[in-house]
Amino acid sequence: MRLSTRIALVVGMVVPLLVVVSGWLLVQLVGKDLRTQADQRLAERAQGVAVAARGLLRATSHDRPRAEQARQRKLFTAALDVGVRLSGPEGTVMDGPQPAASVPLPTRTHHPSTVRSQGRSWRVLAVPVTGRGPGVRGTLWLFSPDTARDAQLGMVRRRVVTVALLAAPLAGAAAWLLAARAARPLRRLQQAAGGLDPHTSAARLDHAPTRITEVDDLARTLQTFLTRYDEQAARTAEALASARSFSAAASHELRTPLMSMQTNLDILDAFQDLDATDRAETVDDLRHEHARLLGLLVMLRALAQGDLVEADSFAVIDLAELADEAVADLRRRHPGAEVVVHSSPGLTIHGWQPGLRSMLDNLLTNALVHGRPAEARAHVVLSLRAGEETGSPRVVLGVEDRGPGVPQQRREAIFQRFQRRADSPGSGLGLTLVAQQAALHRAELRVLDGTGGRGARFEVTFPAAPAHRPQHTALPAHRDWLADPGDRPQGFHKERL
Image (cartoon, rainbow, N blue to C red; front, side):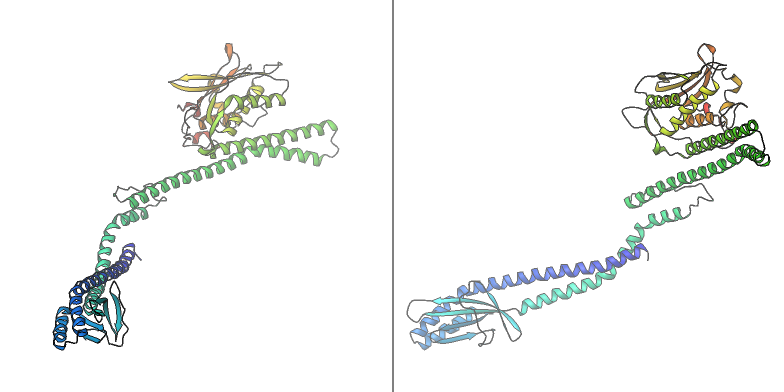
């Protein structure tokens, strides 16, 4: 059922009900007013009738028939249109409309009361009559029938019912017309929303304000919902792309170590009498390939997590504390390495803590493995400092080694996936993960010469987190670091803030 029809039915039922209720209240008020008027008329008439009644009782007590008849006519004339009954020591006289003589009447009431007789009702006022002399004492009753009042109340009731019957269809029709007109913007909104199809068109809801609060609020809600739908659809597409890239990269890179492990297993199975030296070498190869497989899977998983992380996972991170934790873990794993830290406290950025820790671990591990001088102790320097560029506060992270350095022509290629030297024990994804986290945090990643032109320095410049207000991170629109580098339209380190 349409909304306008529902409104018309509700109004068509409610309006007559309101008319009936209002009419009932009106009947009660009119009845009260009519009764008050009748009571006032009885009270006013009682003042003149009481004088005539007193004269009649006086004439009756003195036994004067002629005077008694004159006084009686005077009493009935003073009563006019109200009934009158006078009860005294010598009997009762009555005239005018009044209840039957057998109906009990109130005595000496200060206010009129209602008496019913033979299906009719009367307003009765009892007035005591006293005078000088022993026989001048009695009770005067004045009667006013409720016939006129009942007739007027009946007329009001009939008119209320007539108005209610007429109001039902008229109110329903008017409500339907008004509701249909008011619902027109809602129908236009429904038609506009119903014509949207995200599978065939990128068009979204275009709503012009109608100055109808509910319709405009609904349109804004739909626009917000569609925006969130687009965001979630994009994230779902990215997740599917990441899953496909993960599968493709894993199947490509795991093929070689798995085949090598299969070959070594075949050798151990085929040559049971293999001498101890060859057997130990084969087992070492298996362990090496197994470790490479595990490292590769860990790196692929970390890249997939970085591609799928949401903005609400970001928080204010103290980068100095995180760097101290990463250096402490590195020293425990490599007690022979010399790791120096130069940092200042209170250097905070808005970032994703697991991704930043992974970046630090991979930068330190890369410097330790590839930055070792020939037959010398590894020496790594980690520095953290505050910077100021283009008027915005920055936090600069640097990791420096004393190795052979990185040639100028290789400083971009080393961040591509699976780029590693032949003798590298890694998976070729460590620096790719560093580049992914730099892009994710809107940071600038550069490879420079080390101090004095010796070794290499990896430098990451982050935007600092303001202390006085929260910061909302806008994540890159394109995140698929598991895909082939040719699928990414721009270099990771060329993106500027």
